[in-house]
Image (cartoon, rainbow, N blue to C red; front, side, top):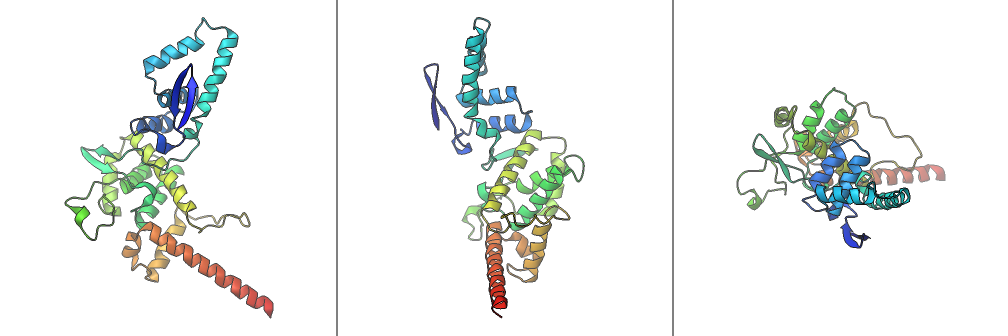
Length: 288
């Protein structure tokens, strides 16, 4: 937390999402991702971060920027306000990688959000969610159909029974991912839950970006342009087929059900082995 003093009063400002109170988090995220960016939105974010009620904030702004203030005083106070706002600007500059909420109600039933860091997510779920997210962003199908599919993919009802005592439990509190059930559930989100859907989208995109950064699977040295995909998620779908053909994790169903971290760890090590073998072949060829 960043300790600052304004008008002889000490404030604690969060410096990252983990320091934001659980009470303020959904409110701030809805402002960030459901309101147009600009001064009024950022001022509201600052108000919440400082812990002022709307009434207190109105009195504060009137005190420092009211008609009784001279032009020089207003300018000085505006600079102080801008400097203070800059301390929370990371909120609209940083990726969202922590859950904005634990669950939300759909027709009276709580749908749980996926765990932070894709801890218990399957390879198939991540791949399908990635495809839906990219298809929505690129508007391959106009409207929110693919956004609804994304949300229904990664937000699901809780498992029933005493699942935590099951020795085969994989740590995921949600019902197992099923793409067919997902399509049916997505219909429940049509023309509703706008704020929740945007937050889920941003949380997934931020988590995906962070997840990809953990693994050395992509060329990023600038030596060659990125390989364009014919459709969103093509490389993930291709890897599903290659892994299932080799039965690394089993057939296609088992491959999709495998933990995404285990799959990417294998792909990373396999890529290292291929690069090392190519280097050995190159050295052997040059020695002739």
